[in-house]
Amino acid sequence: MKEKEFINAIKTVLNSSYIGDDCAYIKSLGVVISQDNLVEDVHFKLDWTTPYQLGWKSAMVNISDICASGAKPLYLTVGLSLPAEIDVNFVREFYKGLKDASKGVEIVGGDITGADKIFISVAAIGSTEGRMISSRKNAKIGQKIVVSGLHGSSGAGLRLLMNGEKEPQKFIRAHLMPSAGIEFSKKIADSIKTDYAMMDTSDGLMDALSQIADASGVKLEIDFSKIPFDKDLKMFEDYEDLILFGGEDYGLVASVSEEFARDFTVIGEVKEGSGVTLIGDNNVRKHFSKSDVEEKIFKHF
Image (cartoon, rainbow, N blue to C red):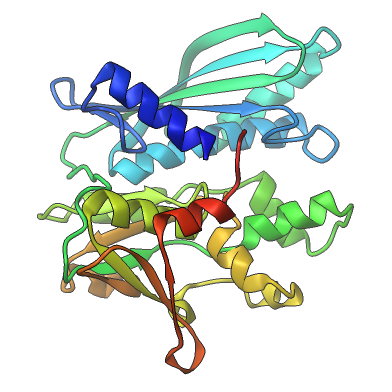
């Protein structure tokens, strides 16, 4: 998978301890920093998204990264590259979407340039004050796996859009206007006292589980029946794949102690081993290695 290869090459060249999680944790400054790009015809199409919805999503995908670290989202900067035919109304509506999505998060600057297509690059900054910061390396044997949000809805929405369908609208809205797990993140990071792993599900629930397992050198055992999802997903024959691999739901997955997990939705446990084992109907178990998961998730290249 080229994206992972490129990231590993960058890590090798830079030899940086900051690269590896959703955010770079700059402990000396008390902040976390993240940056995400959205590219026209790769991450979105103007045929099915409005400028307002695009602005909303551009903010949320970056706020979600800050939430995944456990930090409090505070600031965004926005780089916007636009083709010549885009008018001022597009920019106005885009920034309205950004602003409405960024309640409590201030947009403090950025840049705007010309380009052949629309390119959006947003950097997010969060405060670590009073919060325990996560790392995907922190999953420990015996911890429980907890999640926020519904899984598979965004993937279903994308499927509908690609097929030219407009119903159910709730799935399309889940794809175009996601919500970051701000309260879930705060609830954990404000009160947990021990190390924990946490990621968002931007590339799919199974990707987040696999990456935590790989970085922590453990196995995650997951009970599929415990994963929260909209039951209307069963209208899709492959709804289980949408739940596991659909992506862009921007829920959160965390590994926490059994006692701490009682206030959350528990879907599994951290065990000795590697990869992710999924427990399905009649206790049938299917194991996914890191390469198994990477074969199925969205590829940018």
